[in-house]
Each structure stands twice: as C-alpha cells, then as structure tokens.
Length: 116
Image 1 (spheres, rainbow, N blue to C red):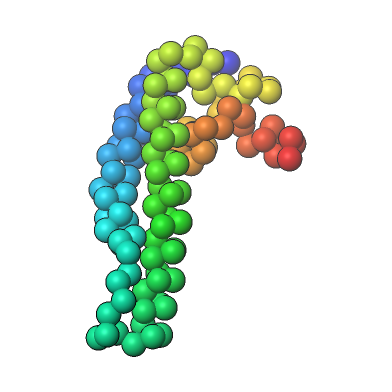
Image 2: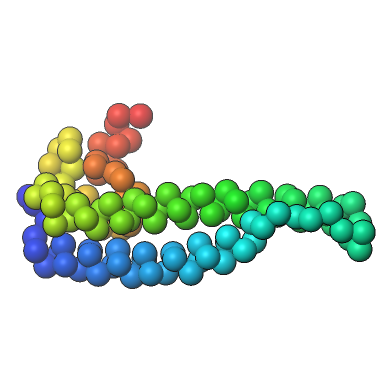
C-alpha cells in the first residue's frame, strides 16, 4: 500500500515546518561554536568548560545539519518518487514520525531492525 496523496501533503507540510524550525536553531548553534579565545579574565577551568561546551555545540550543530539535509532530500523525494513512504523491504507504509526522525530511512522500523 502506497502513501496516499493526502498523507503525502500532510507529511510535506510537517517536514517543511521542521525545516523552518531547524534553520534558526542551526544559526544559534553556529554562534555557540565560535572559537574560544584565550582571555586573561577567565580562569583555566572556565576556559576548559567553554571549550568542552563548544565541542558539545559542534556535535549538536553537525547533527542538526545532517537532519536538515535529510529532510530537504525527503521533501524533494515525496513528489519525485512514487514509492516514497513505503518500506523498501516489505512494502508497508513507513510511519510519518519515522520519516521525520530518520528522513534518510527507506525501511520501516521492523525491517530496519532485522537487517542490523
């Protein structure tokens, strides 16, 4: 069973909303990942904490960028790929929430877990 047009339209809207939510978050994290300048006013521990925090922010930023790219590709595939939303293994519909969480996935949860 393929995802019907109404489901695809709703998913496109949800993906677009998620993309618009991610863009300002990415911009905010870009600011948090600015280089930590050596400064006489902050102590060694505070500087180490700032560097550690920067590393966490960089990892979050990378993750958000990957998700954004995946969502943008999924948004394009919705219209271009008639099989979009169907599991490549069993043919069942992939739940829209899974597509939002793992937009690059072409398998339902059950089939993805079986191939691990």
